[in-house]
Amino acid sequence: MKKETRLAFGVTPSTRRYRLRYARYKALAQTLAEHSKERGGDDACIFDLLDIGSGFGRTAQYLEAEGISDRFRFHGVDIKRKRLDRVYQAERWELKQADVQEGIPYTDGRFDVAVCEQVIEHLRNPDFVIRESHRVLKPGGLLILGVPIFPSPLAIARHHLIPPLYSAMGIPLGSHIHFFTLRAITELILRGDLFDIQEARGFRIVSGGPLAFLEDFAWWWRFNLLLGRTLTSLCTEVQIVAVRKEPLDPGRPE
Image (cartoon, rainbow, N blue to C red; front, side, top):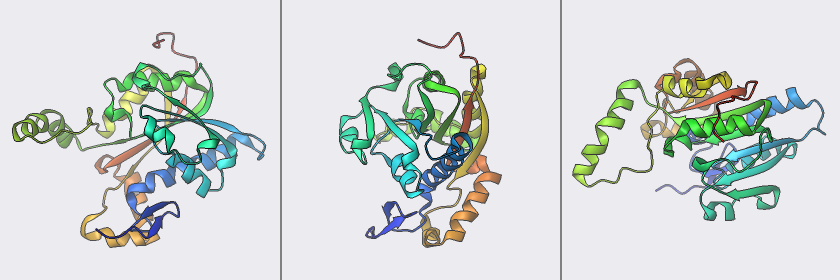
């Protein structure tokens, strides 16, 4: 295995300078830089950000690299204590250990931004977590949600064919419960008229393998961003940028 001697996007230890696996975090940080400028005006305006499934705090790392981390107060929820204990710059976070499938442990309208990256594909009821995200966001608050996606035939195969095949072969299935297409995740976020989608962008349509050496070049990263915006449904991952609508849905779960 090649030693990780570089920093992808100047942040994450990697074998490549523009490793496409981390491009979604760079895009997230750029979106929040634009959002904070549009909504905040001057640098004195501070935004409350909730990271749902905060992990080790990668969101904060990329916002720091973008030069805007001081514009945010970081709040994180994760089911695993070991992640919270090792979160990046823990002193800057309010951290809570919780299973978001049982509810997000914050009051209504608490946050300006909610980030939920690579989480809901692991959950029994992703619709509930999206509704909870809506509940804890302020009016006009921003949700950035990322999931792996598949073209429709592959999604069907992963959902219906792979589990019995893996079971017969004694291969662990992993923790993914849901296998989304672009259409499925878009419909899920729009369900209940809770959010307006501003953008759906894909990542990693062409990455790794024999072309991995190209991930040392900025032009290859930018080319993949273009592919991700034009051929989104064929990408490996998608990131949805959505705005919380008014009013609060009276039928939301408590």
